[in-house]
Image 1 (cartoon, rainbow, N blue to C red):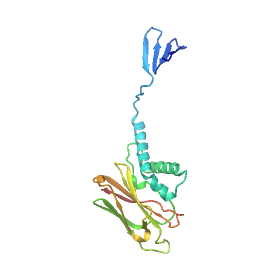
Image 2 (cartoon, rainbow, N blue to C red; image 1 turned 180 degrees about the horizontal axis):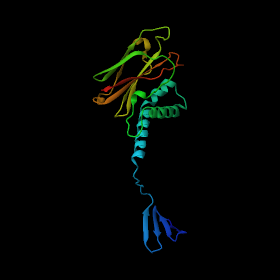
Image 3 (cartoon, one colour; image 1 turned 120 degrees about the vertical axis):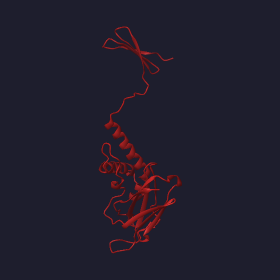
Image 4 (cartoon, one colour; image 1 turned 180 degrees about the vertical axis):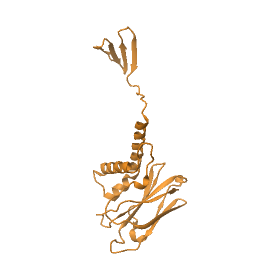
Length: 211
């Protein structure tokens, strides 16, 4: 059995510790015992709780969309840091102040100077989300550029996306979503990546709807 550690406090207290239990003998002769390992229940202020909730939202969004960000930017050792830091900044820009809900329309998963799709729309039927856009090719864009749709479930913090199957010229992309998402609020995004992988567009927010 371990020996209890004891010391004399300069404030006139005798203290000791054994297996996480701390004892203190006060000047008045009373002995006080503390469980050193017990959780410290400190009530947070409303502002502190709001800040905690905000970062939980951010972390859940980043975790759900990290693979998408990796495929947009290409895998590297800095992807996780860049994804988190960029999304933290964008969450702040998305009106995430005290008592405010996240504005998903202001979140940017990919950013760049490349041209995104024109006249993008989105619809949902059964377990499928359909993205549509103008697939007409102009001198400024290429038909083989990669279209990358993403759907994010707000309440379940899950994402479904596709980063290889669809081209700009297709004008349509379909994503299957889980059947248990039915009734949940979803948010839809689109990004375009140049066919050779060197340039990205900004993320285009196409709206939210009920799955």
